[in-house]
Length: 342
Image 1 (cartoon, rainbow, N blue to C red):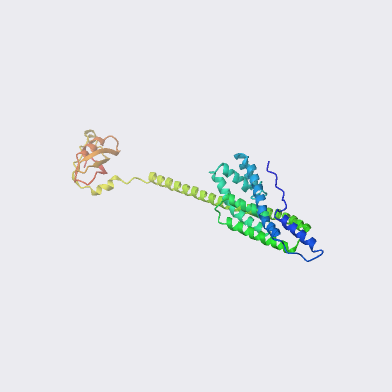
Image 2 (image 1 turned 60 degrees about the vertical axis):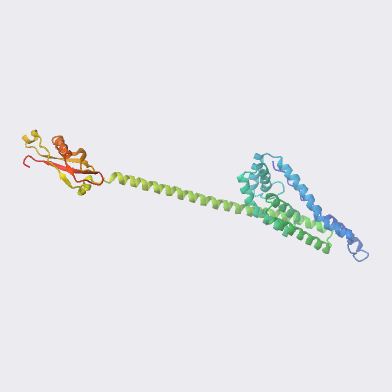
């Protein structure tokens, strides 16, 4: 359950002013208005100080009431007030005060700090607007929230000074206009109605602006994530294409490197007796490696036609071959033909 909304009380600083005005009105029935006495002037000047003290006491009581709530309840109430556009009003039941109380219980909460940072510009504007419509009680309350949220805020002293100056000017104007108690009471009612209307509209606009900013940030994050996923997908497709190309592309023929080989001795293979008697011909492709000293190693049959007839003699012959020394081992292939009439 939310805290009960505080009813708008008559401004304390008006009581001595109205008393002085009433005395002036009675005296005017039989004579000219007398000048205000030093005591009366001092009493009028102390009005704003008394109002500030009363309001400070009320704010302290509200803060104590919020301090009695637990962390979870403060967080839930803050979220609800934020969602319902109760950003800084009414007093004691708004998102700003809930999150200030929550900050005192959880000083390192980054989410709380972020919300307070978002609300500060709107709180400063609301304070200036309350001052300009001469709602000094509300202006002092909001200025107090600015000081609580950020004691070092650059606008804090300026706001307090401008509120005091505007309030003194309003007091002088009221004294000059000699408003009756009924007129001042009516003005106070109108001011309360204007305050409620202005706060509702201001908070609605502020909530819409916050929602727009959050939506923009969320959309930017979604676009960045989509771009990252697309880039990863393109990179994966490129890697897959390269792998397919590697598998499908034939390996360079080892024989291509043989152009750099210079044979020194390549004795012909011995013709198998059975194949010679049968006048059988064929060929064998042998792959082998030439070592840096020109000797042959790792000779093996790659292809033979017919198979297993000339394989042994072809490999034996290749192993006896010699080449000029090379800088590094070279693997190559040679095809050896067998013909009974050769």
